[in-house]
Amino acid sequence: MHLLFKLIFGLALILLVACREDSPSSSTASTKEEPSPKAVAPVPIPQFDARSAYGFIEKQLSFGPRSPDSPGHEACLDWMESQFESSGARVIRQSFKARKLDGGTYEATNLIASFNPDAPDRILLSAHWDTRAVADYDPDQSKRLQPIPGADDGGSGVAVLLEIARQLQAQPIPFGVDIVLFDAEDQGRDGGGDTYSWCQGAQYWGRQTHVPNYKARFGIHLDMVGARHARFAREGYSRQYAPQVLDKVWKLAQGMGYGMYFVDDPEPPVTDDHLFVNEYARIPTINIIHKALGSQTGFGPHWHTHGDDITVIDQRTLKGVGQVVLAVVYNTYMGRF
Image (cartoon, rainbow, N blue to C red):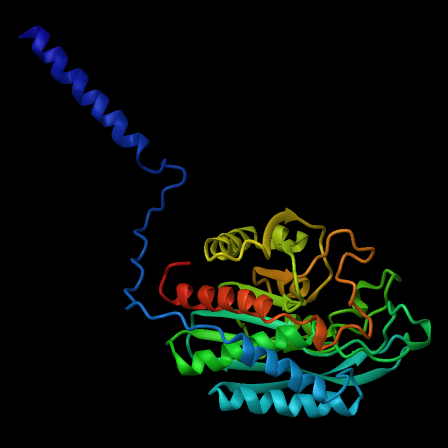
């Protein structure tokens, strides 16, 4: 009997230790029971229409350069607003004074399109819509003071988000999505160390969001997402501010068969709109941006040149980026992301 008692006591002790190892430690376990996620009926993820997105780039190019103070800038703004409204979004113009490099100012406008604006659970999608006023890297030096077409640098991100808005109307979900198109991103001083001359629309929005106390789970910024053979590496500020979001998006993209675009290589930080969304608005935001290998500038050869026209755009790249972002949106709503 004494031996039997020892055996029973020892077995009970082993089970008690094993149970403790499978449970959170007392230092990390919450004292409150976490609420169960709300059950959501699965919904089909729409198919991103790359041909439609390509047409949105062509339409932007039809206005000419969209640099601030140009006729094409105002005309394109009106057109983008009408496109978002026709997709069922609530649209807000956020006007501000942007700083010129010579010390003056000019009028600039962020455009915000919100789906289900009263929903508390939200995500942020963004791009910049202005185009650079000078082609400072054009091989033809006589053209360097002329504005660029901006098919990829500006046009592609806008086009992807316009098509996503169209799909959100076609396959609606009761979930908050805000699309922000930043102005005055591409008018900074190159090589002068003046970081704050870039991304002025994102700086303004980050300090003064379109609604008070705006919150979003996370953000995805798109910049130069339409070129042939694009390479989207793990950009430095994305790794610093939103590593978990970055990991999830890249793994999702690779699982969907788009690993030829979404590569695991780390890249240095890029001063882009997402930096100020992270620092000022405190929303963990990643940047999907084309980073070319072996390039003197780090970007594609068409960057800040007159070669940034429709010929650099590949519908397969637009499809890859657009389908991944759509999958992120709908999977987040369904609790799968």
